[in-house]
Picture 1 (cartoon, helix red, strand yellow):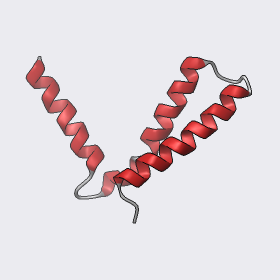
Picture 2: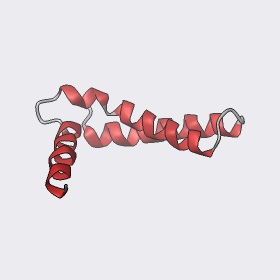
Picture 3: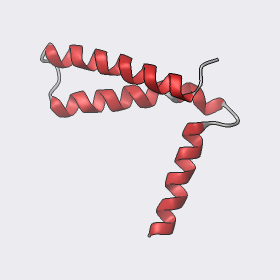
Picture 4: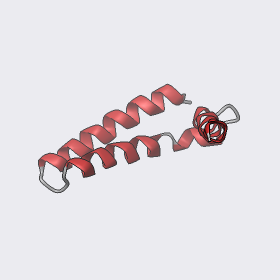
Length: 71
């Protein structure tokens, strides 16, 4: 089974390539391109969420709890 780094790299490459194709076709603008890449990369990390030692869940908890500490 693939790990976090594999999912991250492949999701970024695929979503970047597809977003660039749609951007060059003139269907989206600059901000749409960045949004498509970001959402595609996040979507590629979803298979990691069911793992007991899930890196995306650890990052989410870190962002939530460190945000409270800073406020």
